[in-house]
Image (cartoon, rainbow, N blue to C red):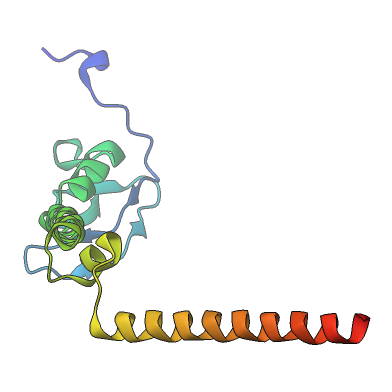
Length: 141
């Protein structure tokens, strides 16, 4: 004999949340008005009055959380994150990578030419400064 306390608490006027059927089609949520409530399972929902077919809001949320597409999306995001981190780490450790070269300041032909130009400019500035010093010394006397 089933007591009154053993029955799930149902107030009617329950909402059916959105769900995806077995074919992967999205079904938007809908309201079930009193005396009806949401019935069915994770893949098919409808309004009814049969307590044995009731799907509670908690069960509906559980269906959403463990949807195969949700799990696949989370797994894809984790794999992508790991791939990006692994690529960056490898790029810092591989001598042919730009980040490695920049980190270790490996001289490239372009960098050597750039350094040569900087040295020449500094040398010219030094000569200019010495000329100004000589000229200013001549005009002081």
